[in-house]
Every structure is written in C-alpha cells, then in structure tokens.
Length: 305
Image 1 (cartoon, one colour):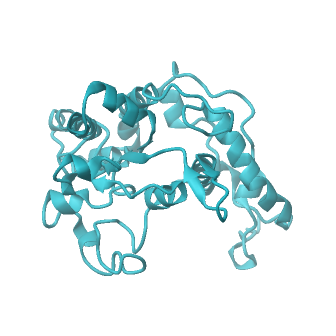
Image 2: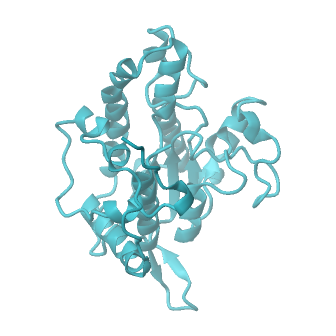
C-alpha cells in the first residue's frame, strides 16, 4: 500500500480534479460537468466489471459476496464492498458510469464512456513477461486496453466525430503497474533490487499512454485542474481543498510517524524517467501534518541504553 502521505495526496488530487471539472448550473446548487464521459484504464483499483466478463472466475473473490454488499447489494466485479475511486469521480462530475468494455455490445453502450481496466492487468505487454519465463495474472496489458479504446472510437463514428468525443472526455489512467512487480517478484523469487530494474519500463509504458491522451485535448481552463490543464493548477486546487482542514487540526507535539519510511530520499519512479518534464515548483508540502499524531497506545517505546 502507498505510504500515508502519498495516499492522502492522491485522494486530494482526485477530489480537486473532480471538483474543478464541474461548475454550478445555478439550479439548486447542482453541478454541470464540463466533461461528457469518462474513459478509464488500469487494474483492479479501477476495474468495474471487465475481469468478471473475462472468465467466470476472472474477478476472483470480487465475483462473490460480500463484495459489493454495501452499495450495489451484489457482486459487480469491483474489488471493493462498495464503490471504487472511479465511481466517486464520475458521480462528482455528474456523468454516467462508464460501461465495462467487455460488457458492451454496441456503439450505444460506449457513447457515454467506457472502462477498460481489468483486475490483474499489467502496464507491460505479455511478451515482456513470457520472454522472462513469467506468466501474468491475466493476459491483459495497458497496450491491450488502448487497443480496445481504439476499437471503441472506431465504433463511435467518423474521425471528426471521434475528435469531438475525445475533446469532451476525461481520461483516467491508472493505478497500474503494481501487478508487473508482483508477477516479477513472485514468479521467480526475485530480490527487490531485481524488481526495481523493471521500474523504468513500467514508468515509460504508463507515461506514453498518458502523453497520448493528453494530446487529444488542447483546450485550456483558467480554473486550476480543468480540461487540458498542467499539474500546477491541479496541485493548487488540492492545496486549497486541504487548507481548511490543516487549520482546524490540532497537532500534539512529539508524537509523529517516523520520517524515513514516509519520505524516501529519492523515489524510484522519478529516477526512472530523468528526461520527463518536471512539474513547476511550488507544490504544497504537508509532511508534518500528513505524518500526523499517533494515539498514545501506538507511540514508540523508549529503549534503555
């Protein structure tokens, strides 16, 4: 699981993206989305039913109760007892839930969005693993998902109509990549150092897809985090959303999570793409707040020396 600061920041960024992508229509405070649909890609953290259609047992435990019991009242293939982050995003935007690609049958099923994520999917393609004597959990990679997306666009109409559709669509890529590391580590009992050598390939695969989709929307917004905006506006919106909570929270001195495990000196993923464009400076730093106070019972004990 991601360290607490990264997890909280990710949730804040997603909240800011959804909030800034919607506007008040003036009728009872309801929000009108500036996007018409969502196209999502990833693994089990985003899959809303594709693994379930891939095979009768493809979704594993997610195909049986108690999965889905708290919201849908039945298993839907989601790796959750309720909704996933993608569900909350589409609800905040006020757009329909995207149809799982493998559940669709005609163009009408995808006109309001599609979800290509599959539980167990990898960022790297099948050939990469087969050449190393490894077998992924499912035979679906990010490359397969982008091919499915192209199939959907072809179904939806002419090239001009496809441009109109993509220019008013939100693309969610990820989370994806963790299964690459699981397969690599578990399949041949590799060390952490050996698995780390796969990081540049995973980052490049995900980054390539993101770059491709980013080029489909040339619009710019004056509101941070809108369609086509750079990461600086999104981070600024996230900072504003968190500002109020930071003021209200009382922090007891001397009771904090250890610094070292939460913030490694240099993250593996930024190192893996040294030539990638760095985001502008000025990202908010909330390390002290996010490490937060621990309850008294969890305080580290002093060791007599």
